[in-house]
Image (tube, rainbow, N blue to C red):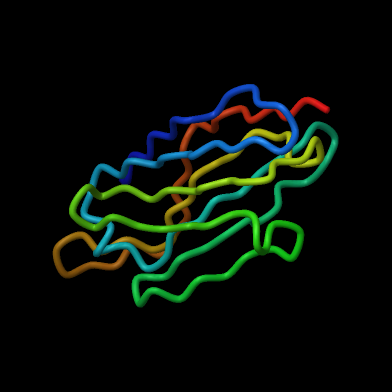
Length: 122
């Protein structure tokens, strides 16, 4: 199993910034991709940003130019820097790890953190 622990959520005014952190219990070098998802009340969970083990980055259109995903392999941590926050960014943000290598065996599944609340006031 991969344990993921998120931190950094909170309440911020529109236009402000937050940085979310996701600490993994294994070397993230052994994880195929790591991502941030979010789920607002009454809405489906959506992919916000993803970074692969090869360094490829992708973002949902609504956060491009405002959010930045990054990874620190030495700390086994993935970050989501969120700038110019909008009320519509309000959601629970979840860290996701997809496909993890344990020894010589790949576990092809999704691992999830417990989520951290981000609330942006207008």
